[in-house]
Image (cartoon, rainbow, N blue to C red):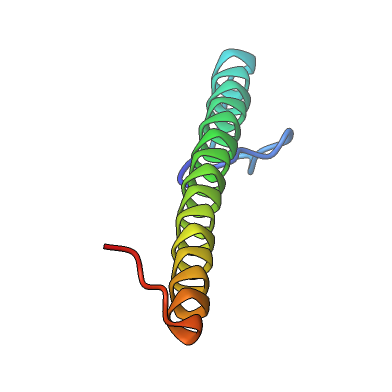
Length: 74
C-alpha cells in the first residue's frame, strides 16, 4: 500500500481533519480497486499463455502420432 493511513484519533501534536481522513480512505479504496484490476488482468494473460502452451503441446502430440505411423503432413 502506498498511502499513509491516519488513525481516527491522531497524536495530540498532529491534527488531521475529517476531510483529510476521508481523502486517505478514498485513496486507499481507489488503490485497492486498481490493484484488483491489475491482478485480474495478469490472470487473464496467464490463462492465455497456458492455453497457447496447451495448443502447442497438443499439436506436437498429433505430429508425433502421425510420425509414428509414418504419415507426416506435408
